[in-house]
Length: 128
Image 1 (tube, one colour):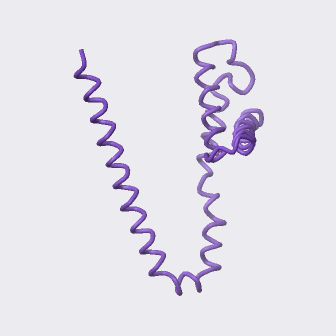
Image 2: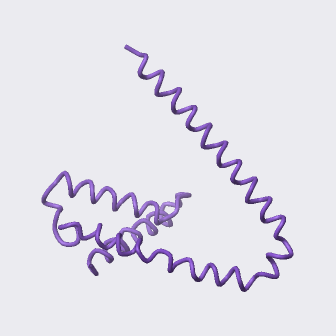
């Protein structure tokens, strides 16, 4: 379990170092997750990689344990919100408006992306 958690954190660290070193505008943990995904895909394809924390669903078990306790990570955020209730009362309408607008923009961009992707895939299928 400790080796599996260490592998997950090592992938995150490598992703963070790569992003900062290359100046890429992508979060380091995202790059680390992609690296971990490549390791897991490689493990399934090449049995020689199925050693240590990659063997016997070790990483999967560690990630299940982390997900089971994920709600604990929201406690500090909740405490922070409670400590700033005065700001929330003062700027609450503006915060709600910004959240509503950002949700609408996100939905529109998602729909636009889906439409463009589906048109692109439809054109590819029509070609002989």
